[in-house]
Image (tube, rainbow, N blue to C red; front, side):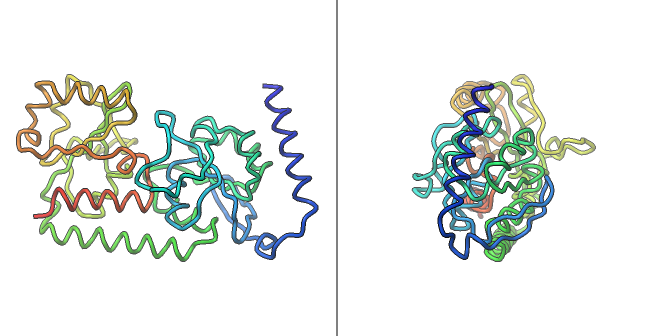
Length: 309
Protein backbone atom coordinates (compact mmCIF):
# COMPACT_ATOMS: atom_id res chain seq x y z
CA UNK A 1 0.00 0.00 0.00
CA UNK A 2 2.88 2.38 0.85
CA UNK A 3 4.47 1.81 -2.55
CA UNK A 4 1.12 2.38 -4.21
CA UNK A 5 0.60 5.71 -2.48
CA UNK A 6 4.16 6.85 -3.22
CA UNK A 7 3.71 6.00 -6.89
CA UNK A 8 0.40 7.83 -7.00
CA UNK A 9 1.85 10.91 -5.32
CA UNK A 10 4.74 10.93 -7.79
CA UNK A 11 2.40 10.61 -10.76
CA UNK A 12 0.16 13.42 -9.55
CA UNK A 13 3.17 15.67 -8.87
CA UNK A 14 4.60 14.99 -12.30
CA UNK A 15 1.32 15.79 -13.98
CA UNK A 16 0.97 18.99 -11.99
CA UNK A 17 4.44 20.02 -13.11
CA UNK A 18 3.61 19.32 -16.74
CA UNK A 19 0.42 21.35 -16.53
CA UNK A 20 2.04 24.44 -15.08
CA UNK A 21 4.20 25.56 -17.96
CA UNK A 22 2.27 25.41 -21.22
CA UNK A 23 -0.11 28.00 -22.51
CA UNK A 24 -3.71 26.92 -21.89
CA UNK A 25 -6.53 27.37 -24.31
CA UNK A 26 -9.42 29.68 -23.32
CA UNK A 27 -11.74 26.65 -22.98
CA UNK A 28 -9.37 25.04 -20.50
CA UNK A 29 -9.13 28.18 -18.33
CA UNK A 30 -12.90 28.68 -18.07
CA UNK A 31 -14.57 26.78 -15.23
CA UNK A 32 -18.03 26.20 -13.84
CA UNK A 33 -19.18 25.25 -10.35
CA UNK A 34 -21.01 21.91 -10.05
CA UNK A 35 -22.91 20.86 -6.92
CA UNK A 36 -22.93 17.08 -6.53
CA UNK A 37 -23.06 14.20 -4.03
CA UNK A 38 -19.74 15.12 -2.39
CA UNK A 39 -20.10 18.92 -2.31
CA UNK A 40 -19.20 21.61 -4.82
CA UNK A 41 -16.45 21.39 -7.42
CA UNK A 42 -15.15 23.72 -10.12
CA UNK A 43 -14.78 21.88 -13.42
CA UNK A 44 -13.58 22.93 -16.89
CA UNK A 45 -16.31 24.55 -18.99
CA UNK A 46 -15.50 22.12 -21.81
CA UNK A 47 -13.53 19.14 -20.46
CA UNK A 48 -11.57 17.20 -23.07
CA UNK A 49 -9.88 14.42 -21.08
CA UNK A 50 -12.61 12.71 -19.11
CA UNK A 51 -12.31 9.56 -16.99
CA UNK A 52 -15.55 7.79 -16.06
CA UNK A 53 -15.87 5.30 -13.20
CA UNK A 54 -19.30 3.75 -13.70
CA UNK A 55 -21.11 2.08 -16.56
CA UNK A 56 -23.83 4.74 -16.70
CA UNK A 57 -21.18 7.38 -17.23
CA UNK A 58 -19.70 5.52 -20.20
CA UNK A 59 -23.18 5.56 -21.76
CA UNK A 60 -23.73 9.21 -20.83
CA UNK A 61 -20.44 10.51 -22.16
CA UNK A 62 -20.72 8.69 -25.48
CA UNK A 63 -24.39 9.61 -25.84
CA UNK A 64 -23.29 13.25 -25.59
CA UNK A 65 -20.43 12.90 -28.05
CA UNK A 66 -17.62 12.78 -25.47
CA UNK A 67 -15.22 9.84 -25.74
CA UNK A 68 -13.64 9.18 -22.31
CA UNK A 69 -9.88 8.75 -22.23
CA UNK A 70 -10.37 6.10 -19.54
CA UNK A 71 -13.18 4.09 -17.99
CA UNK A 72 -13.76 1.57 -15.22
CA UNK A 73 -15.58 -1.64 -16.01
CA UNK A 74 -18.00 -3.94 -14.21
CA UNK A 75 -16.00 -6.70 -12.52
CA UNK A 76 -17.65 -9.66 -14.30
CA UNK A 77 -17.15 -8.17 -17.74
CA UNK A 78 -14.27 -7.90 -20.16
CA UNK A 79 -14.09 -5.35 -22.94
CA UNK A 80 -16.50 -2.49 -23.50
CA UNK A 81 -20.25 -2.63 -24.19
CA UNK A 82 -20.96 -3.77 -27.73
CA UNK A 83 -24.08 -1.60 -27.99
CA UNK A 84 -21.91 1.55 -27.91
CA UNK A 85 -20.05 0.50 -31.04
CA UNK A 86 -16.56 1.46 -32.14
CA UNK A 87 -16.50 4.67 -30.09
CA UNK A 88 -15.15 2.75 -27.11
CA UNK A 89 -11.99 1.52 -28.87
CA UNK A 90 -9.72 4.32 -27.69
CA UNK A 91 -10.79 4.16 -24.03
CA UNK A 92 -8.19 2.90 -21.55
CA UNK A 93 -9.12 0.43 -18.81
CA UNK A 94 -8.71 2.03 -15.36
CA UNK A 95 -9.82 -0.86 -13.15
CA UNK A 96 -13.22 -1.95 -11.89
CA UNK A 97 -16.15 0.03 -10.54
CA UNK A 98 -15.30 -1.02 -6.98
CA UNK A 99 -11.51 -0.77 -7.32
CA UNK A 100 -10.47 1.96 -9.76
CA UNK A 101 -6.75 2.04 -10.59
CA UNK A 102 -5.64 5.45 -9.32
CA UNK A 103 -2.21 5.28 -10.90
CA UNK A 104 -3.70 4.52 -14.31
CA UNK A 105 -6.16 7.38 -13.90
CA UNK A 106 -3.42 9.85 -12.96
CA UNK A 107 -1.35 8.69 -15.91
CA UNK A 108 -4.13 9.74 -18.31
CA UNK A 109 -3.89 13.37 -17.14
CA UNK A 110 -7.68 13.86 -16.96
CA UNK A 111 -9.31 17.26 -16.58
CA UNK A 112 -12.55 15.74 -15.21
CA UNK A 113 -13.45 12.53 -13.37
CA UNK A 114 -17.06 11.31 -13.13
CA UNK A 115 -17.89 8.72 -10.49
CA UNK A 116 -20.47 7.44 -8.02
CA UNK A 117 -20.62 7.95 -4.27
CA UNK A 118 -22.46 4.63 -4.04
CA UNK A 119 -19.46 2.79 -5.45
CA UNK A 120 -16.34 4.93 -4.97
CA UNK A 121 -16.86 7.21 -1.96
CA UNK A 122 -13.67 5.99 -0.24
CA UNK A 123 -11.59 7.04 -3.26
CA UNK A 124 -13.02 10.54 -3.61
CA UNK A 125 -10.25 12.49 -1.88
CA UNK A 126 -7.51 10.74 -3.85
CA UNK A 127 -9.38 11.19 -7.12
CA UNK A 128 -9.93 14.88 -6.39
CA UNK A 129 -6.19 15.36 -6.05
CA UNK A 130 -5.79 14.02 -9.58
CA UNK A 131 -8.51 16.12 -11.27
CA UNK A 132 -11.85 17.84 -10.53
CA UNK A 133 -14.18 15.01 -9.54
CA UNK A 134 -17.98 14.93 -9.67
CA UNK A 135 -19.97 12.13 -8.02
CA UNK A 136 -23.60 11.19 -8.40
CA UNK A 137 -25.28 9.81 -5.26
CA UNK A 138 -26.95 6.53 -6.22
CA UNK A 139 -27.30 4.23 -9.22
CA UNK A 140 -30.32 2.84 -11.04
CA UNK A 141 -33.31 4.57 -9.54
CA UNK A 142 -31.83 8.06 -10.08
CA UNK A 143 -30.53 7.40 -13.60
CA UNK A 144 -32.28 10.38 -15.19
CA UNK A 145 -31.04 12.86 -12.58
CA UNK A 146 -27.57 11.32 -12.85
CA UNK A 147 -27.64 11.75 -16.63
CA UNK A 148 -28.49 15.43 -16.34
CA UNK A 149 -25.86 16.06 -13.64
CA UNK A 150 -23.13 14.29 -15.60
CA UNK A 151 -24.25 16.07 -18.74
CA UNK A 152 -23.91 19.40 -16.96
CA UNK A 153 -20.43 18.49 -15.70
CA UNK A 154 -19.45 17.62 -19.28
CA UNK A 155 -20.64 21.01 -20.51
CA UNK A 156 -23.51 19.34 -22.38
CA UNK A 157 -26.53 20.26 -20.25
CA UNK A 158 -28.83 21.29 -23.10
CA UNK A 159 -27.89 18.26 -25.19
CA UNK A 160 -28.61 16.00 -22.22
CA UNK A 161 -32.05 17.52 -21.64
CA UNK A 162 -32.88 17.13 -25.32
CA UNK A 163 -31.89 13.45 -25.38
CA UNK A 164 -33.86 12.73 -22.22
CA UNK A 165 -36.94 14.50 -23.59
CA UNK A 166 -36.67 12.50 -26.82
CA UNK A 167 -36.41 9.24 -24.86
CA UNK A 168 -39.46 10.16 -22.72
CA UNK A 169 -41.56 11.00 -25.76
CA UNK A 170 -40.56 7.77 -27.49
CA UNK A 171 -41.45 5.67 -24.41
CA UNK A 172 -44.85 7.34 -24.22
CA UNK A 173 -45.49 6.79 -27.93
CA UNK A 174 -44.53 3.13 -27.61
CA UNK A 175 -47.01 2.71 -24.77
CA UNK A 176 -49.73 4.24 -26.92
CA UNK A 177 -49.11 1.69 -29.68
CA UNK A 178 -49.69 -1.13 -27.18
CA UNK A 179 -53.26 -0.06 -26.43
CA UNK A 180 -53.49 -0.64 -22.69
CA UNK A 181 -49.88 -1.47 -21.72
CA UNK A 182 -50.68 -1.70 -18.01
CA UNK A 183 -52.53 -4.97 -18.69
CA UNK A 184 -49.28 -6.61 -19.85
CA UNK A 185 -47.43 -7.91 -16.79
CA UNK A 186 -43.75 -7.86 -17.69
CA UNK A 187 -41.24 -9.82 -15.59
CA UNK A 188 -37.54 -8.91 -15.48
CA UNK A 189 -35.17 -11.70 -14.40
CA UNK A 190 -31.41 -11.49 -14.05
CA UNK A 191 -29.03 -14.33 -13.41
CA UNK A 192 -26.04 -13.35 -11.27
CA UNK A 193 -22.97 -15.52 -10.60
CA UNK A 194 -24.39 -16.65 -7.23
CA UNK A 195 -28.11 -15.82 -7.30
CA UNK A 196 -31.23 -15.12 -9.33
CA UNK A 197 -32.88 -11.70 -9.12
CA UNK A 198 -36.19 -10.18 -10.11
CA UNK A 199 -36.12 -6.45 -10.76
CA UNK A 200 -38.60 -4.00 -9.32
CA UNK A 201 -39.99 -0.54 -10.10
CA UNK A 202 -36.94 1.40 -8.88
CA UNK A 203 -34.42 -0.46 -11.02
CA UNK A 204 -33.15 1.05 -14.27
CA UNK A 205 -35.03 -1.36 -16.50
CA UNK A 206 -38.07 -1.20 -14.22
CA UNK A 207 -38.21 2.57 -14.66
CA UNK A 208 -38.04 2.19 -18.44
CA UNK A 209 -40.98 -0.22 -18.33
CA UNK A 210 -42.91 2.25 -16.18
CA UNK A 211 -42.20 5.06 -18.65
CA UNK A 212 -43.86 2.92 -21.33
CA UNK A 213 -46.78 2.28 -18.95
CA UNK A 214 -46.32 -1.48 -18.76
CA UNK A 215 -47.65 -3.53 -15.86
CA UNK A 216 -45.56 -5.70 -13.56
CA UNK A 217 -46.33 -8.97 -11.75
CA UNK A 218 -47.34 -8.36 -8.13
CA UNK A 219 -44.22 -10.22 -6.95
CA UNK A 220 -42.02 -7.61 -8.67
CA UNK A 221 -43.73 -4.51 -7.33
CA UNK A 222 -41.81 -5.05 -4.07
CA UNK A 223 -44.56 -3.22 -2.21
CA UNK A 224 -43.64 -2.16 1.32
CA UNK A 225 -39.94 -2.88 0.90
CA UNK A 226 -37.17 -0.39 1.50
CA UNK A 227 -35.15 -1.89 -1.36
CA UNK A 228 -37.34 -1.71 -4.44
CA UNK A 229 -34.67 -2.20 -7.09
CA UNK A 230 -34.51 -5.99 -6.94
CA UNK A 231 -35.17 -9.07 -4.85
CA UNK A 232 -33.60 -12.54 -4.81
CA UNK A 233 -35.28 -15.77 -5.83
CA UNK A 234 -33.84 -19.24 -5.23
CA UNK A 235 -33.78 -21.80 -8.07
CA UNK A 236 -36.45 -23.74 -6.18
CA UNK A 237 -38.76 -20.70 -6.30
CA UNK A 238 -38.46 -19.96 -10.01
CA UNK A 239 -42.26 -20.07 -10.30
CA UNK A 240 -42.22 -16.62 -8.67
CA UNK A 241 -40.63 -15.00 -11.72
CA UNK A 242 -43.57 -15.69 -14.07
CA UNK A 243 -45.44 -12.98 -15.96
CA UNK A 244 -47.25 -12.46 -19.24
CA UNK A 245 -43.82 -11.81 -20.75
CA UNK A 246 -40.38 -12.49 -19.26
CA UNK A 247 -37.16 -10.70 -20.21
CA UNK A 248 -34.05 -12.57 -19.06
CA UNK A 249 -30.44 -11.36 -18.74
CA UNK A 250 -27.21 -12.78 -17.28
CA UNK A 251 -24.29 -10.91 -15.71
CA UNK A 252 -21.08 -12.52 -16.95
CA UNK A 253 -20.08 -15.99 -18.09
CA UNK A 254 -20.68 -17.79 -14.80
CA UNK A 255 -24.18 -16.34 -14.58
CA UNK A 256 -24.87 -17.31 -18.19
CA UNK A 257 -24.01 -20.92 -17.34
CA UNK A 258 -26.44 -20.78 -14.38
CA UNK A 259 -29.08 -19.29 -16.68
CA UNK A 260 -28.67 -22.11 -19.19
CA UNK A 261 -28.98 -24.75 -16.47
CA UNK A 262 -32.01 -23.21 -14.80
CA UNK A 263 -33.95 -22.36 -17.95
CA UNK A 264 -33.53 -25.93 -19.22
CA UNK A 265 -35.10 -27.31 -16.04
CA UNK A 266 -38.74 -28.33 -15.48
CA UNK A 267 -39.60 -25.44 -13.12
CA UNK A 268 -38.62 -22.84 -15.70
CA UNK A 269 -40.18 -24.76 -18.55
CA UNK A 270 -43.43 -24.86 -16.60
CA UNK A 271 -43.77 -21.05 -16.45
CA UNK A 272 -46.77 -19.62 -18.27
CA UNK A 273 -44.71 -17.14 -20.29
CA UNK A 274 -42.28 -19.87 -21.32
CA UNK A 275 -45.09 -22.17 -22.46
CA UNK A 276 -46.56 -19.28 -24.45
CA UNK A 277 -43.19 -18.61 -26.14
CA UNK A 278 -42.90 -15.21 -24.47
CA UNK A 279 -39.64 -15.53 -22.54
CA UNK A 280 -36.89 -13.55 -24.23
CA UNK A 281 -33.15 -13.36 -23.57
CA UNK A 282 -31.89 -9.75 -23.70
CA UNK A 283 -28.43 -8.18 -23.32
CA UNK A 284 -27.38 -7.55 -19.74
CA UNK A 285 -25.28 -4.60 -20.92
CA UNK A 286 -28.36 -2.65 -21.97
CA UNK A 287 -31.04 -3.88 -19.57
CA UNK A 288 -28.86 -3.85 -16.47
CA UNK A 289 -25.43 -2.23 -16.62
CA UNK A 290 -26.01 0.46 -19.27
CA UNK A 291 -28.14 2.70 -17.02
CA UNK A 292 -28.09 5.55 -19.53
CA UNK A 293 -30.20 7.14 -22.23
CA UNK A 294 -28.74 5.08 -25.08
CA UNK A 295 -29.19 1.83 -23.14
CA UNK A 296 -32.76 2.89 -22.32
CA UNK A 297 -33.39 3.36 -26.04
CA UNK A 298 -32.14 -0.18 -26.66
CA UNK A 299 -34.63 -1.48 -24.08
CA UNK A 300 -37.39 0.36 -25.95
CA UNK A 301 -36.18 -1.38 -29.14
CA UNK A 302 -36.58 -4.77 -27.42
CA UNK A 303 -40.01 -3.90 -26.07
CA UNK A 304 -41.21 -2.70 -29.46
CA UNK A 305 -39.92 -5.87 -31.15
CA UNK A 306 -41.46 -8.27 -28.63
CA UNK A 307 -44.67 -6.55 -27.51
CA UNK A 308 -45.95 -4.61 -30.52
CA UNK A 309 -49.24 -6.02 -31.84
